[in-house]
Length: 221
Image (cartoon, rainbow, N blue to C red; front, side, top):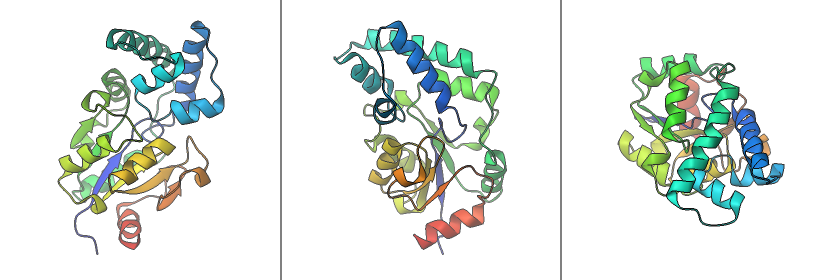
């Protein structure tokens, strides 16, 4: 049986089911700039990606850091304004966090979101204290599907990669976590279960997930 277990959570689409609000914000942002995105482009180039990669895809050119910062803030203001009154944790999340904390399981959150969105999330969901480590877009130079953010999260947890399980909702995020050597449980808030390749299980939410179930899944894989 696995003795040491670490758990890493992505934020958007995992901590809360908010990607429809990000989608609406990106569409609003693009409309203001005279650009249209297809659903396929959103799924491939927006969800799970760092803003720099997304914005350079949208504008089809390399952008200076000042322009990226300005566009990011413009889009995130839209997102926060439409989501602030809807924000709630994914079903079963708090129960699972409590279960993991009681069993002394180290936890990290690793998200491609900018620091302002992490602060926004924790201002409405008081769950920051559950996490031993927090990583956001400011901690990495390469976005998902590059494994950098999960490699760093695993290093912070000080466990072998195979002892770490990542909850991810995006295709690029799953690839990043697998690339870091972690086990992955897919959360089907953003993609259909069949799209999340290489995961050990796909769940719609955390209602049926417990520490013992998680331990069993990781041990069997």
